[in-house]
Image (cartoon, rainbow, N blue to C red):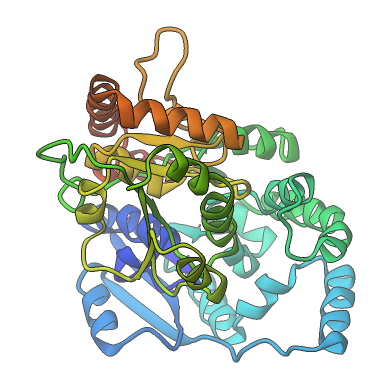
Length: 403
């Protein structure tokens, strides 16, 4: 089968972030059984070695330069809003749009080169024309609903610009609903996003394909470190993770230190924002690593891994990686979204916390109870091995593409 995959994010190496991780690990197994052409964009941090590394995994790799940086200033922002209002397309989608890519895809479809086209992340939907549904299978892999994300940020007071987001919210709802009509198949990562997409497109077929873990990159721990080290992992230049790191460091961790004076907190992630780095100046027990060669190594050195996200939708790869490594997890509803971690007939796999007292209670119980740590560690790893390996998830994705 001839498959065209569109990804505005250059998905290699897959360790750069969640979008890179999901895109590459779904493409790679499928490309072993089908002829896959990947059209993507090169940002400034993509090296020639990255291009060579990705090229070996697909039949054809077509790389375009990413557009120039977006203009700043109040006038530019007003212009973007007016454009959003008139065209119905969000600024972040238009920012990544390439006329060269559009022409390339148009020519390929006209020439009937492909049996199926996939959009790896919803921002790539802009290249799909509605009439193509009649001549080629079109698939959109929605990593997380942009409408639900914006709505949640307003509800939880985590938006970095509430006035803008209140204006954008109804427009995002209209945009996401309209864009779904162009696709033969819709893929989401969680049941919550499935419900949202089915509400937007009642006649559409919506399939859940979760995120996964590379078990070789995240081997199971050999022992319980039995210390008071807490770890949080995530791209620390992304506002969702910045908010989580600052919230936990300022509101939860000091209370943990009162109970366990030797407690430490390690924030692992690339490109830490200034406000994240500032946390180390406010508390000497906090370490910010930046990008590291092995995330698993840091997980194995920690007694507890936290996912204290207050916003952001979709299944979190970081949480799955915690569980794969065997590190006991304490996470919020957002951090644990889409993962069955407790309940009737379900083995306990993580502890849930959404308030400061809940975090303190959960982490304290794990620090004090080795048997509880062992239970979460073992049950978490077993779940990942059974349901969240990339090879099995790619097989499900392949079936969607094949129709």
